[in-house]
Amino acid sequence: MHFKNTTLCYIEKDDCYLMLHRTKKENDENHDKWIGIGGKFEAGESPEDCLLREVIEETGLSLRTFRYRGIVTFVSDSLEATEYMHLFTSSDFSGELKECDEGELEWLKKEKLYEFTLWEGDRIFLDLLDTDEPFFSLKLMYSGETLTNAFLNGRRIR
Image: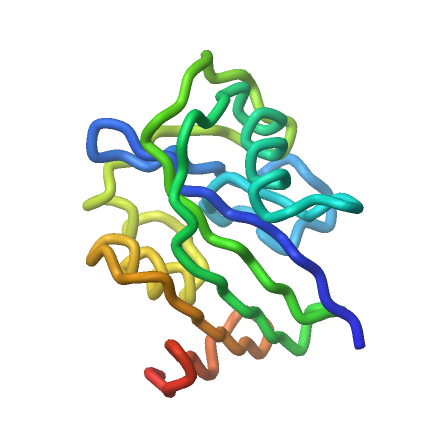
């Protein structure tokens, strides 16, 4: 059984999220999509360890505090493994933005976010963040880039 653990963080400032337009990596499953900040766990890391390391590596920012919002399970016929993504938000950070080697970083207004190229399932958990949903478990099932099923806290929502 293959699986991977990742983190994703939506960093907030002035009613915007810091988003990464994934344009620079070869063979990137997120190519041309706008996503939050995060990446894969390294050996021995907790979700929080991975979160803090990835945010510094990708943005140059240091999170002072953050909130663990939920876990998102991705199942796809195009992924080698099931992915368990630990989802966080933060509006408490320090440092200066640096250039990211995976794409372009940009502060995007929350109300304009859906005008950009996002994964369909990301729209579901962005809505959950926006409505301040308590800690949740979301399972997203894809065929290629098409969302086929979604389950929130074990109940089918799509």
